[in-house]
Image (cartoon, rainbow, N blue to C red; front, side, top):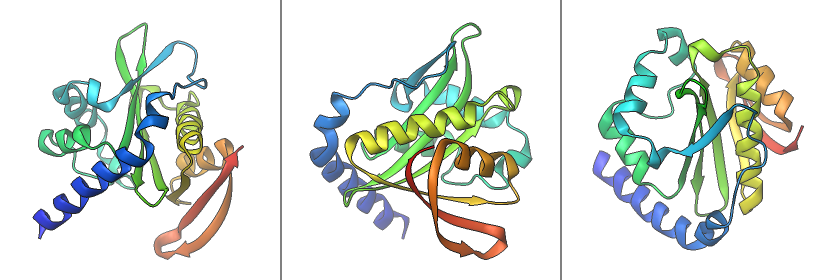
Length: 184
């Protein structure tokens, strides 16, 4: 019943755009790390995103499986007005250093996620991208949530460093469902 999910996604995208589109049009980031620029996912060639995901080690996907990583799935995300996805680009090397998103819904809720390129880990970019996601999410009026595994130490610390959070629920496999309250 994948067609049904696609239909629901299209409806959500259109209605989300009607509700939040004007606010997004006027939005610009103020929290971009020095030496990097932010691009919307829809402005990045699909092949470049597929290559980005393809060069990440298998362990990077242990806790990160929010969508498919092939060209067809990336193109669906690029067309969605409710999938607020951004690429963090190293200006000097013209390389994708990270990818982040708020998967957003008409009723005012967003779920954030991010991945830092293997060659850029340990530089605080995960925390920086969380702050960017908070900035756009709160800036347009969303309530933000995230699930994170306590076993994924870097991601867990990044979530806590960038935000004040409330644990909504302890989940199986050492995961927690967090509500992002505000900037950390």
